[in-house]
Amino acid sequence: MSCPCTPARPGPADVVRLLFLIHRYLGIALSLAVLLWCTSGLVMMYVQYPRFTNDEQLQGLAELDLQACCTWPSDFSNLDVDRFRVEMLDGRPIVRLDSTWGRFALDIQDGRYLDSFDEARAQQLAAAAAEQLGLGSEVDYLGTTGFDQWTIGFGVSQHSPLYLFATEDDAGTRFYISGTSGEIVQMTTASERFWNWLGAVTHWFYPTILRQHATVWLNTIIWTTILGLFLTLVGLYIGFKQLKRRRSGRLSPYRGLRLWHHWAGLVFGILTLTWLFSGLLSLNPWGTLESRSFALEQFRLQGDEGMQLTDAQDTLADIRSARLPPDTVRLVGAMLNNRLFLTAWTGAGEAVRLDAATLRPKPLTEDELRRASAILRPEVPIVDQELLTEEDAYYYTHHIEMRLPVYRIRYSDGERIYLDGTTGELAYAVDASQRGSRWLFAALHRGDFAAIVRQRPVWDLMMWVLMLGVTVGAATGVWLGVDRIARALRRIGHRRAVAASRSGD
Image 1 (spheres, rainbow, N blue to C red):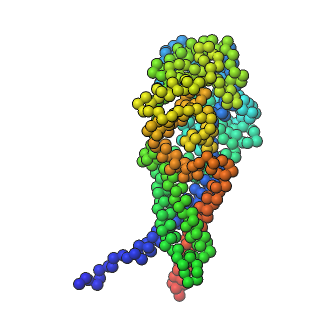
Image 2: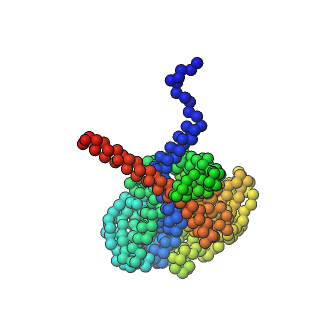
């Protein structure tokens, strides 16, 4: 015979009551975060986090004037070069070298190293760049920074210090000049800055005070998302458990905003779950969808002989007499299958491939692309390869424009490599992890699972309906939490008032 003082084991009713309490109080803590993710996601459909794109870089460059080219530093020893680019900087031709030893910038008019830029020099460059971009020649220097809200976490730390300038154009443009290369590395407008506080900064938990501590930031957003998943799962369980026919004929026991929360949770709860889950995967928690670098394929594509600095010097030796395409603002030199080619870029973003020996146009052929594809992954059979003039399920535009044409190589193990149809360089690559990310993150999170759905305004209409449904569930959850807290505070106030009146008696 058991002792009558032994506590009874919790039954199913106790478990359900516990789940109700968990959902109630965890919802008070997290429903605002879910609501902010929803509303900021709507903003991000139209305003992305500011990036200084390749097209914007080209627009900010002056047309090449290579009559003074080329003088090289006398003490510059030969080295391996991955690629080089020739541009104008404040009226002078310069070459930027990417090598295994780092990045170097050289003034090839007089052969000087360009390894640092002080405040006065940055102001000169800023005035010239602003005029080239059509922002006017008047710029205001706002100070020096290592990073701030619009530069942290986007690969600009190597350019520190950054010099910040504001222009007097109607858009309220601001841009940052690199203290190490003299280039513009970031540009924002007043509209972008405003909407990103309501969009990406909120969506990614991206205020500088948190983002500057990368590990803290990552764990904060990962665990908040995991708790949000748990909250949603519990809510779905409760929602379906409460769904039954009553004597009144009603299916839900709730009224008012609680009824809205119940139905929104039932209808859009699974969607909320998929968005939280896919958002979590976008953070690659604990290396879940860690992709490989394809560095070996990059090396093979260039060729095992590689490029030397002398190759760049020989190629540019006769550049003054070359007839470059009109409005050429950048020349890029890179190897393809042990042969050096140049790409002439115009200010409008158009590219023309040139033979490095003759400096004449030499468009890339499918035969060259086919020969290049054969050396990328010789150990894996190729299923098919073709030149694409349209996007496919993995190579497509979503806010960031993807260049076409592109040469696609598909392998028997499911991997894909895309080569730029103009330059032959590796434009994109897909391994098993990226395939998973494509469907478990992009398709679930952004709804771009098919070409027809990506078309606008089809995508806009679909996303607005779905996001508003999830937002209603989150917003009513916030209201219920606020109402619960307000009632608790009123009860506490009432008790204190009663206690005070009794002590007075």
